[in-house]
Length: 79
Image: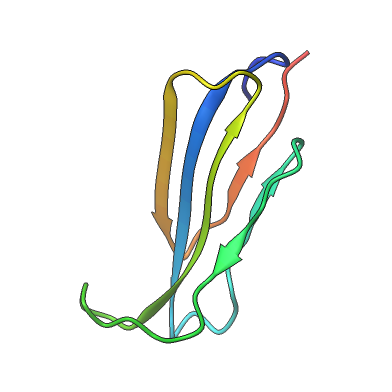
């Protein structure tokens, strides 16, 4: 959870490997523009595709960077 009035630049990335069997996702309580790669990238070993968000919310500010492989990214507002 992050503060309800969060102002930050988000750099979120979830990679998934071709043996996972399904795409990963990025979810948020804020409206985000999520992009996904079409082709498999083998530059880091096991072929993978990427789900990404690079976006400013609130007035911007510090960077929140999250990278994961075969896991989802979920961003929730605190109380």
